[in-house]
Length: 120
Ligand code: FES
Image 1 (cartoon, rainbow, N blue to C red):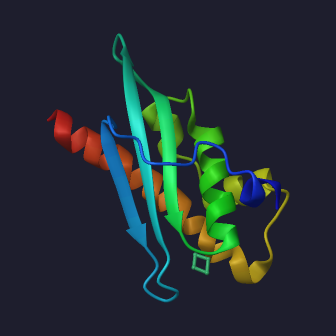
Image 2: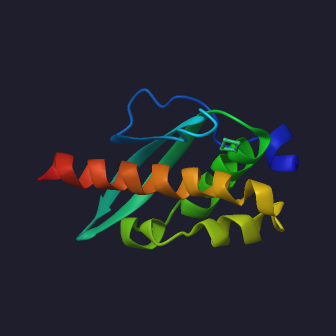
């Protein structure tokens, strides 16, 4: 509820290096994850991250949490964040809302994929 009422890192990032986008066709919710990547030698680190979510309370809370979990991580580490990691960090989600945490991990992975495609 705290991450729903006081979401962290919410809002559009105008100078994002990549934008992940994912929607849930069942409920119609839509999520964008913006990332800014810093290159440290051969390592690519998430230096900035924000989100915009048009959806339910759980979708907003999981978006907020994934931005906190991914900040400062390498792209490899961030891509491994699972929906269970997000739910656990929120001290659990009601079973009916677990699917909402898929959106956050999928949107982040989509942003990382697009960043890598752009760099090629
Ligand atoms: Fe749609 Fe939560 S009900 S993501």
